[in-house]
Each structure stands twice: as structure tokens, then as C-alpha cells.
Length: 396
Image 1 (cartoon, one colour):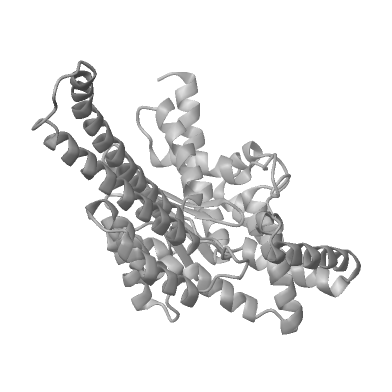
Image 2 (cartoon, helix red, strand yellow):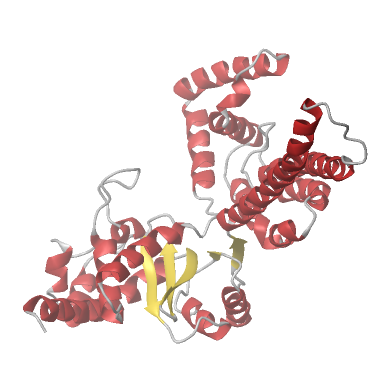
């Protein structure tokens, strides 16, 4: 083995030992988590990330990804309240098993990103079928058109082409209805309705009940099943509850919600319709109020904080998955030590851009680390790190 290989193994071994200490401190801070699994060959890696800090809180090679395995992992997060996952059966069973032993059941949000991706795939298949039927009809008509130009009679030769054309037209009409329905269904997974109102479970479910039956056929079956699950709208319940807990007068809160809704949907301020003109007038007044009224500014900030903290996609963990996949590309075998080394580096490095710029995932999660780089941290023993952390303040 080369010197570099031995050094990497030693660093991986140290990282694995240090993460045991760091996990003891950080995991009790995790109240929300996005969880997923990826594979190294046939071996699953159980992945988890805290959404606000993007702290990589779980990265473990496992023998299985069944419900019992996931339940054991969830048990390592004593403060966990909300879980975002895809529709994996192992994750769902793990949540059910975990809730049996928890005093307060975990809230579960079914990943919006995967649902939208599945629906987009179904729509592409629907659209592709229309184009194929139209192409088949055109192929049948092409030789007939050649005969017609030559002055030959087409009597008795157009039945098949007419039938193909009629089938293509019917498919086109059905696709137009499907596209309309899919557009309305997507709106149910947004925070605000097209009218600028804050979305709620009741409103979204009523709209889904109205439009989901129009997404028929085997192509749309999986998308419809996902949207019929109550977990698809859990994020709306959380928003409604958290906004209700804000200590802001109702009229001020409603104005702040409307202000934030228009900020997120600027297209509603465009157009010549009377409603658009009225919205523009209200927006101008609210903008002046936002700059001059501290109470309104604070209310908007509170509402914005609730909406920004609405995590509805386990695809957050996909960014961490990509880090692991890069590691797989560089090494033939991904060991627990190498995975730990990558996780330690990720959690200690500071973000260079975005609203998290200048802080590391550990810092954003509230952990105060010993001064120095992650490489200096790697040179500590677990006992030294535990002693250092015990003398440092861990932010709530």
C-alpha cells in the first residue's frame, strides 16, 4: 500500500472515531431531517441531512434498508419531530415502528420533488404517445396523398388512415385535458395559490379531489397514489400551525402573508385587469409601509421565516448523495471510514455562497467547535475532542 493510501486510511479511522463524539452532541439538536438511501453496489448507505444547516447528520453503510434498520436510526435522534422522505417502503415502515416507541409521533412529509418528477415523467409519456399516433397517421396518409396528386382514385383506401387520424385527434384532446389537470394538481403542492392566497390542506385536498380523477390510466397511477397519501400535504399543516403560533395580531399577520405571497408571485402584479391594478396599488402602499412601519416589517420577517423553514423535499439530501457519488468515483470501495472522513469535512467546511455563506453546517446547527481547520480537528483524539466540546458553549 502506498504512503498516501496509508495516510488516507489513518485519517478515515480518526474521522470515524471523532464523529461518534460529534454525533453525541449534534443529533439531539436535530428537530427536522430529510432521509434517503443510496447504494454502493448492493450495499445501502443510509443518508440524513438537517435541512436548515445542511448538516450531514447520518451517513452509514448498512446491511439492510428495511423498517427495523431505519427505526433504529430514527431512535438516535431524540429531538426529531419532522421527517421528509420519498415513498420508500423501508422508510415508511421505519417511521411506523419509530412512532410506536415515541411519546409524540413524528410528522411525515412525503417528498414533493419526487412526486413532481413522477408526474412530469407521466406527462412526457402522455405527450410522446400523442406525437407517435400523429406520426403514424401521417405515414399512412403520405402514400395516399401521392396517389391523389397523380390523379388516382382513393376510394376504399382511406379507412385505415382515417381511423389512425381520428385516434390521434382523440389522444390530442385527452392530452389537453390531462395537461390542464396536471397544471391544477401541481398548484396544490405550492405554498400559495394562483390567486395569491396561502394554501391549506383543505383547499389543496378539495382541488386534488376535483382534478386527480382526470389523470387516468396506468401512466398516471403512481403519481395519483402519491398525491392521495395524506403525507403529501403535511407541510401545509405545519405552515398553518406555525403561523397560528406567531404572536402577531390577525390583521397584521394577514397583511404580512399577503405581502409575502405577492413577493413570491410577481406575475400577479402584471396585466391590465382591474384585479391586477388593485393588487399593484395595494403592493405600493404595503411596500412603503414595510419600509416605515417596524411592526409590519417584523411581522413580514416572522411570516417569511416560517415559510422559509417549510421543508417539503427530501431532495435536500440528494445534494449530499452527490458528494458520496463523487467519492465512489474516486475509490473502488467506499468504507465506513472514508464515508466518515467525507462527512467530517462537509460539516466543518464553510459555505462560500448563499444565505449560509461564511458558516459551516456544524456552526449553523449550533455547535461551537475548537478553533482551527477541520484538519486540525482531525488530529485530536476522541477524548480530547470530548473535553474541548464540554468546555465550549453549544448554542440552543
